[in-house]
Every structure is written in C-alpha cells, then in structure tokens.
View 1 (cartoon, helix red, strand yellow):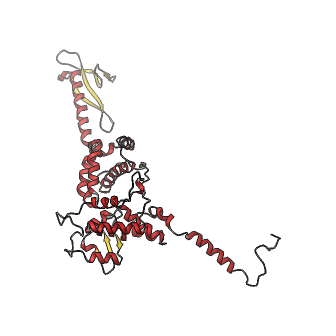
View 2 (cartoon, rainbow, N blue to C red; view 1 turned 90 degrees about the vertical axis):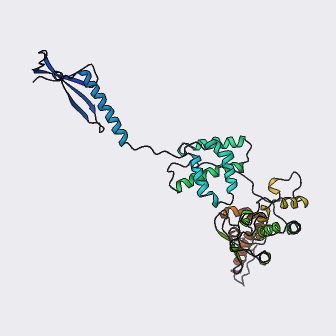
View 3 (cartoon, rainbow, N blue to C red; view 1 turned 30 degrees about the vertical axis):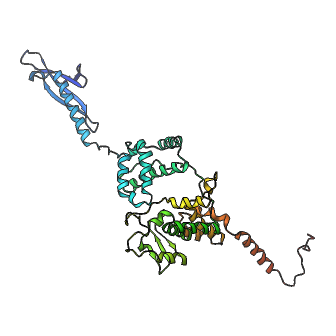
Amino acid sequence: MGERRERTKYQGVYQRRSEIKRDSRDGKIDICYYITYKDKNRKKIWETIGWKSQGFTAHFARDKLVERIQELKIEYTLEKPQKKEVMTFGEAWSIYSEKWLPNLSRSRDEQGRYDIHIAPRFAATPLDQIKTIDLEDFKQELAAKGLSPASIKHVLGNIRRVFNKMVEWELFDGRIPTTGFKMPKIDNARVRYLTPEEAERLMAELKKRSLTWWRIASLSLHTGMRVGEILALTRSDLDFDNGVIHVRFGKTGTRMAHMNDEVKSFLREMPNRHHAALLFPSNKDDDARVMEASKTFSRVVKYLGLNPDGIDERQKVVFHTLRHTFASWLAITGEPLYTISELMGHASLEMTKRYAHLCPDTKQRAVAKIASMALQALPRDSNLSHDASPGGF
C-alpha cells in the first residue's frame, strides 16, 4: 500500500496521505488526520479524526487532542483517592478537652498550659506536621522563657497525651512526635519529712486555725493520699466496715487507701451529708471543691519556722511533705518497699526506691543469718578451730 502516518507540526498529531482517494473540491490527494495519546493505564491510543475532504484539519486534530488530554486528567482526578485532611492540634485539643480533660484531677492546670504555651505555637499546625525536631525547638523556647525543667515536662506531657488520645480514638494514624523524645530531666524529689514532734506541732496549730484543713492534712499524713485525691472524695468513697477509702481520681487510676483508728474517728464525726456529696465542699457551693491551695497551711508552716530563709526547695515543708512523711515513717519502721508502693499508689516500684535509704539494714541481717546457718552445720564435736584448719592456714 505504501501509506504511512507522518508527523505534523503539532505534537501528537499525525497525517496519512491516500494514494487513491482524492479531495473532490480541488482534486488533490486526500489526507486523513490522527491523534495519539496514552490512557489512564499508560496504554498508547491512536484515534482517527477524519479526512481533509470532510473538512478536518491538522489544527482541528490538535484541538481534539487537547480535549482528550483534559478529559483524562479530570477522570484521573476523580478516581484518585483524595488525601485525607489532617486535623490541627487546636482541633485535636478541642476534642481532648471535651472528652477527656474533665476526667483529670488537674484539668485547670492542663488547660492553662495549653492556653499560655501550646496554643500560640501549635494550635494552627496539622498533627502530621508536628515533628520531633519541632518539639526539641519548643523545649528550648520554653527554657528561654524561664520555665523550670518540671514545668517544661508538664507542657510536653500535655502534647503527648493529646496525640495518644487521638491515636487511641482512631482520629489520627500518623507518627506521634514524642516517640523516642527525651523529656527534660528533673531532680525535684522531696527529701524532707517531718519528725513526730514537728508533725504534732503542725497538726495542733492547723486544728486551731481550720478544722477543715486539719482533717485534710490528717488524711494525707495518715493515708499518704495526695491533696487532689482527698479533695475529690465523696461520702460514698468511705467504707468504714472494711476500713478503706476508695480513691477514684488518683494519678495511677482507682486504688484504695487504708484508714487507721484516728482517721475513722474524725471522719465519722464529720457532718453526715448525702451519699454522693463531696467530703470537703466549698463554703460557697456544696457541689464545688475547696481550693487546692490553702493559705492556712502555708501560714502555719511559716509561723512554726519550718522553712527558714535560703532553704533548698527540696527541703521546704509543703502540703506534699505530709504524704512524703507517711512513706518515710513506714520505711523507718521496716515496712517492705512493695507495701509502701501499694499504699502510696505509685506507678512503679522505682518511684518508691527513694525511701530505701530509710529502711533498716535488712541486707546486713540477711547475710548474718547465712553465717549463722553455716556455723550450725559444723559437727558439734569438731576440734577444728578457725585458726587451726588443714594445710596450716
């Protein structure tokens, strides 16, 4: 035949001259126009546009090619899965604050850290765009503002909890930027505990000034409960028959604190309000908790001179010192660290080891028992002495 497609001046447009067919208008050899392109599966397509004798031109074929390419682009866009829009940290916080924040005993503290530090930096940032390096920079920024390592750790902990909840609730499936992230190291473990004489003076002075805060302080000293746990107690949490207090809002979840006779006595003397009522309500509202920070306690500590000027922060007497005293006294009397850990509601035994140095020297006693048992195993009629053993030693 000899007929073949030839390129035109338009890319993707070809023509083929017929050896037998002629244009009736001018008698010249007729020309057929084609276009070529690849479909969505990358397969090459040849499409016949028409003959010159029918009024088709190379320019028309070029326009038809452009049209086909546009149609393919639209089809590809419609079929291509659209990238899921990732929520911003601010949107995640809104969900977190509604669904989870009310469950926390220190919800106001978390909200404050978000408003002051986190929101200005990350509220408008999509979760998948917050990288570990961004948190490293943020950590340095917080330090430059003068925040303590403990405060920085609290702020970064807020961010970690939001990410964890979004993953848990299947609202985010990306990488959590705090994975492998090194939190600031802090050494704020309080080493100060009260002597029995100091505790007696403190409690006596508290009772003179505020019966409510004497009761709250007594609970902490005799059970090791945190102030937030105490302020969240209701009448239904008290089980006098079994001598336990159900702690429902602890840092490590629900646990039990144990009453001694003194605790049972003053709790029974308290006003008998309805079953679900707070044990320590606000004076202004029976359904509201009392303030977590008491000026009464700090005034008594100052009055008794327990915090002299220039004292190390870890040596200062604060309300938490009562809880620390509870654990320290248990260690001094020889209670096992595991028992102390359970009573304190510690997340791990590692946290309780700070009291190990107060425990009696049980290791020395244990080794002494081994020596005693070894001596008992020697024959009673043996004439060997410690310095007359075989071999002359």
